[in-house]
Length: 254
Image 1 (tube, rainbow, N blue to C red):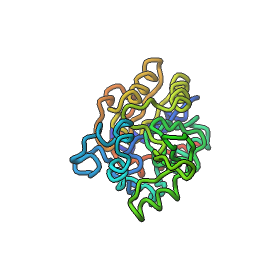
Image 2: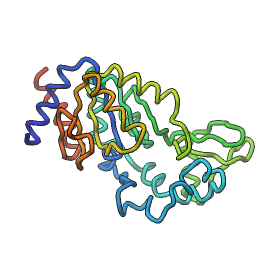
Image 3: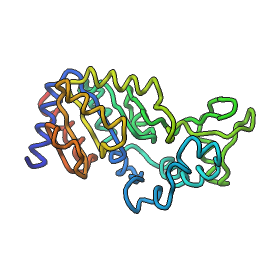
């Protein structure tokens, strides 16, 4: 199936669905300038011992080391803006074709472009929590200061270290978002997967759960995934091009 035909088929499936759910990974944000840091030569994971710098234990042992490591991601995320793929997903929700979006991303670009129901299963960068007194702080100004002075931020109340509200190795997924994501998948009759390699557990199991109870699955990703074989439509192309084209197809037939 060529790309144009696959886009038309994806639109048909969305039109026929009653409870569509979006599912996004890093690939939806690469057109916004946020690299997929898991890819070779992307920078963040090169020469890094993930359990040493990106685990909860590693953070507690050396917060500054964590912040030094995560600095490139913070810098690009603060400059990033939603791209046409994010906007298209928000439009699909507004038009009733999607009931919400499950995202593995921490960049907050879905909320910034108008998506309303978002399950951020790996956390987000909007806030940071003190690991001593557990007060929650808005993160934007903290990160701006960190990018200026390179010093790991501390709590203004007790002086404890502030950890961004993202999920590190050794942490459980945020209960409310994870439960909401699983409930959405149980109800879904269609899952639109965008920009995910579908390898990070346990979140990568959600599309399989949906497929097991009969949901249609659409995958839009530049590279093949291990779950392509189970999908009803697979489109290996730029999500920032494909998703607006799907919206256009739906608008033409409405």
